[in-house]
Image 1 (tube, rainbow, N blue to C red):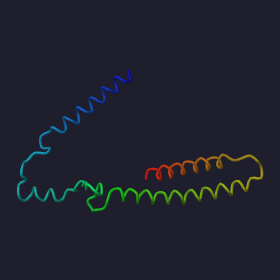
Image 2 (image 1 turned 135 degrees about the horizontal axis):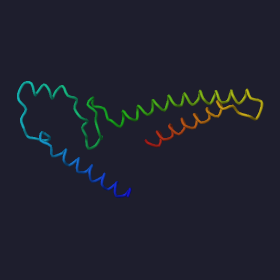
Image 3 (image 1 turned 60 degrees about the vertical axis):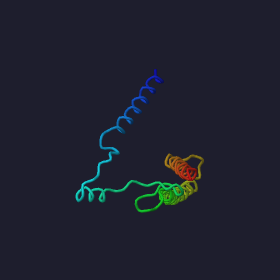
Image 4 (image 1 turned 90 degrees about the vertical axis):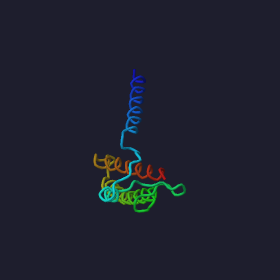
Length: 127
């Protein structure tokens, strides 16, 4: 039953894409009127263009991949700083406790550390 619903959903989505592609006004060869229509197209942001060698370029001329990598690098730095803070707090908590019992907040810190490490690892593997 689930397989049948999945096939129906796929068929409907393909049909929707095809019907949207056939809508009037898409890809028509009408010439824009001089004046108002020409300024309207200049004000709209241009979609990213694809160069065969470089990949996808943003309207400002930079490569989309480079911008994504830069943002991921900055996020990795922030997460690494937060990871260091949590590790120091965990070390202090462990040094404070002379017993072999941990508090719930200490266990929560270990979970937070693990989550941050997984986020950083997934971003690094993405590259």
